[in-house]
Image 1 (cartoon, rainbow, N blue to C red):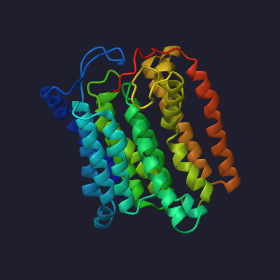
Image 2: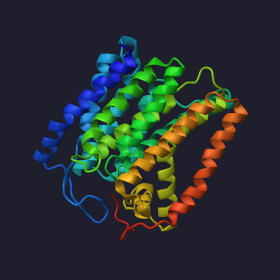
Image 3: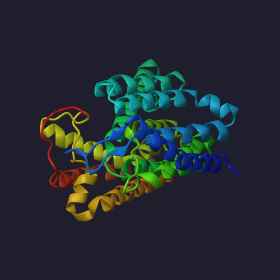
Image 4: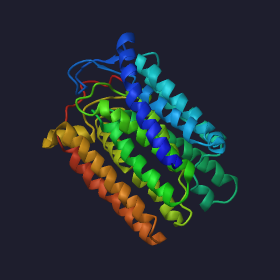
Amino acid sequence: MSAGLLAFLIALSASLVLTVPVRALAIRVGMVDLPGPRKVHLKPIPLLGGLAMYGGVMLAILIAFDGAARAQSFGIVTGATLVAIVGFLDDRGWLHHQVKLFVGMPLAAVFLLATGIHAQVFSVLLRGRPGQWLDAALTILWVVGITASFSILDHMDGLCAGVAAMASIFFALIAYLNGQTLVTTLAAAVLGAAAGFLRWNFKPAKIFMGDGGAMFLGFLMATLALKLRLEHATTAASWFAPVLILCATIFDTTLVTISRSRRGLLPFATPGKDHSAHRLANLGLGQRGAVLAMYLAGAVCGSAAVLVTYLSSSGAILIGALVMISMLPAVAWLERAPYERQLDKTAA
């Protein structure tokens, strides 16, 4: 059995099984998400579901990775554990939201940098230390941005886990086609953990992943993007493919950032029912339809990512630019769609 398939099956089974006792634990310790004007659920729902996904991924790494791969994954495991802990503490109400954004996420990115995982953009364009320092800054910005985007994406049953699972499919596929065993195996583990959790999280959700789970998934998505290497593709394809795979969550973050900024609100600190899925649901798709539409967007953009790996530099740039440009009218259209406005500027 291949390492990727083994990791998927381990993470899937562990996530499925662990969610049950984790749900009972959340209820016992009172970690539940209460209904409110900014929430779509009408009754208290247990949190801590991210703990089951964390257990699934870590168990898969422990069993499916060989010694060399486990050693290489030290920075990934450390960073993922840090953001998960910070997220769980935030779920418990023990941390201010700025701690996770300005301390937890950047520190997790530093762990990646310390173990040699970083962006390779400016170092290709600029030789020497300037390129290296700029790539380090880009790595921190990328990890914080993607982790935060998944944190705010967890606002509807099955949405965050499903979008992460869809992205993991394409990370695993492209990595497999390029002979990247570690990335393939890690992506397969994330896919299994997210898919197993979806059994309990898809509408009507019996448990939420909480910020710990959403940040954990977001950090791993950012890491997979940084680790993805396309040996037989152009440099342009190497830059565009990870962005395209994560286009669904990037689109949602772009929408709420523009919309909330125009209304004088802080994008990552002001929760509300103004995300893409909320607006799609209000346009007549309903909650399930809106979530499935986001899955479809992830699948289309992921397919575009696979396509650019086979194109020349000009072709990859053309496809990538077309996808990015097409986001602008979509953002403008959805920004005019109905949504429930925030009543104040209280932070999450």
